[in-house]
Length: 134
Image (tube, rainbow, N blue to C red; front, side, top):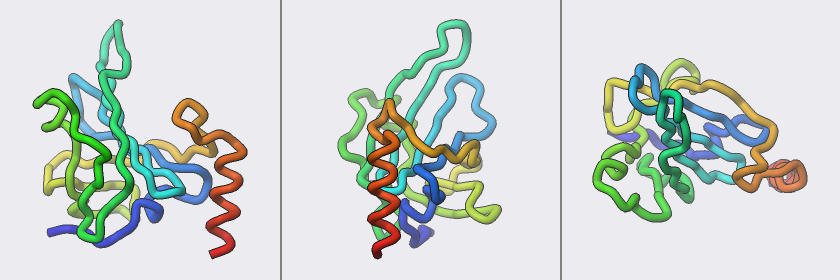
């Protein structure tokens, strides 16, 4: 089973939305959906030395709900960590299920910009203007 939707449908109206995997104990896995359709996966470790473990960009979602990763992670454990196919959208779009897994990604925030990842105020303004023209 897969869902037919666009990544832009999951990004909200500002700049993007962050979804965090529920019930994780060792890592904090996040998916960020942006206005232009791009998706970013981020994995953080917990604890005193909490930091970004790795991140990965995707071009968007395919027509079958498959995430179009720009490249595969180098390590097998990282390859197993990333979601592959959006299989269900729940709770009016605030909960996403991937690969029919029990654990979902829950929306944690909607953000107006994301400068560290290249979405500053001017770029977001241009993206929103482009969307309005369509």
